[in-house]
Image (cartoon, rainbow, N blue to C red; front, side, top):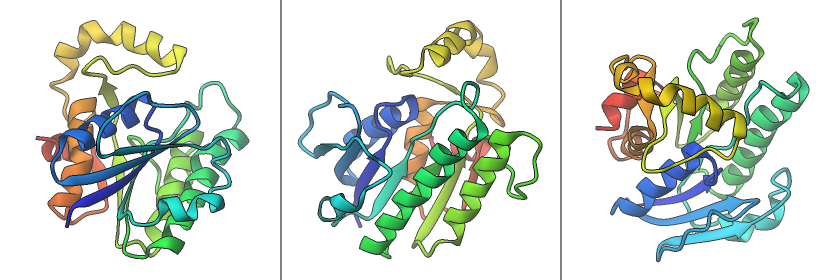
Length: 222
């Protein structure tokens, strides 16, 4: 069955990568992106909806109908926001979107960009890992046809892809010269090309597990 994908976060670094791979892959029939700001891309199988309040998707029920996959790539760094705000964006917004999609179609696959070492016990002293684990647990408990949690570590941007965050751009500017060394650490390092391909290939190959660490992402992205 062809993939009919909805992408949240297609203007971010990972979302851009997933969108590019979807547009290039013949097994992806159509793509709907939900953004607050335009991704500024045109393609025959691409449709974009600008929707400013992502915490209320109920008005988009009709537009979200007819799809079978969600690539959820929304997120925000925890460095400059409080735990409550991080919980709101990472957990509450994700679960709201997932709940809306489940009401529309129970036969749905949900692919979530989490993070390396996300804590499934929800007891970590590191807030980001604890919240990511809480979000993963909630998604895995929902009655999707399949749910995949992708846990990349360091992600090298490729194909001119850039983050919208000034802080993230600065971070990658520092590490870019070292990527030729870092890329050999496949248990923690991947790149946007591989990650985008892995998210699609997990569906096409009916990946048996639910959680993909960096080493699994690198294997599935080839």
